[in-house]
Amino acid sequence: MIDSSAKVSAATEVQTPNPFIEFVVRLVREKPLGTAGAVIVLGFLIAGLFSEFVAPYPLNEIHILDRLEPPGGNYLLGTDNLGRDMLSQIIYGARVSMIIGFSVVAAQTVVSVLIGLTSGYIGGTFDMVVQRFVDAWNVLPMFIVYLTVIGMIGSGYLQLILVMGISGGIGGARGPRMLAFWVKSGGYYDSARAVGASTRQVIMRHLLPNVMPMLIVAVTAGIGGVVLMETGLAFLGWGLPGQIPSWGGMISGDKRIYMEGAPWMVVFPGLVLATTIFGLNVFGDAVRDLLDPRLRGGAGGVGRYGGVHFKAKEKALARAKKKLKRQEKRLAR
Image 1 (cartoon, helix red, strand yellow):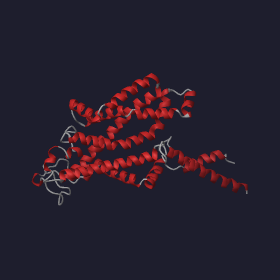
Image 2 (cartoon, one colour):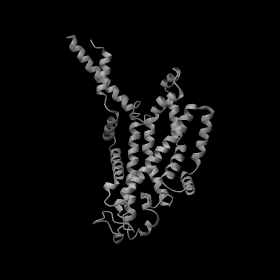
Image 3 (cartoon, one colour):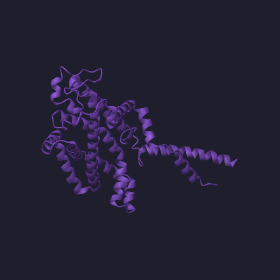
Image 4 (cartoon, helix red, strand yellow):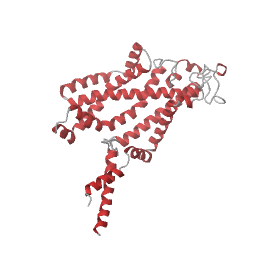
């Protein structure tokens, strides 16, 4: 007779649901508002990535005879003071905003994880010194810091990403540090150290995978704030150069002069910006509710150590055991 544990293992491997699919199903069933936010974000992301194919006109193509044309006809959302199609500008601006948002949040996550996990893992005097620096950094008004540094080094993609990524990463180091302490309190951490695991192995195989759900929550919740911050900088004239279309740049500068005679130049970019930030925020809240294990109902992740994966394993194991019992009963007859 085939070993029972082998049967259970084989059945479990075959029937284990995909953790990502499990997460998507829970998102659709339990968080309809978060699902709507995900659809909004995904729509703008696709439009930005394929803007050359989606936009009705090329970037910065000027139709001087059709300047300040109201919405309708050949220009669904009208034209600006230079005769550029507003819909095309908004679609190309989606790419810029998404690049800035995702890049800055990725940089912030890397910096905060490096500082927070290292500080929380080492502890002691090193942790105290690092956290006092982080506390002092968090006292500074970040918007003023961004304006000051960008004023010194200039504006551009790289400058914005580095300034906002590093500054936000330092300020957000407390989160990964607290998660590191939380993970260290688990028994598997002490077990890993007891069997002689190196520092790199403990961080990469135990600390980082277990804080990944909370990092995913922080990333999804932070993109909206970054897009809004970039818009604020552009509105004050400290964002990306004028030839790069961004939603913040479309509602700043000389565009406000035409607010009375051509309100569509400001209204449509503003509506798109508000809709995108709304979608990012509600989707981030939904991801937090589903993945953060510190909240009731939070599964704790979708990866190798995630709660969704473990719950799927438990269900598959229970089904495999029932199936095995039925097979053993048939063999006994």
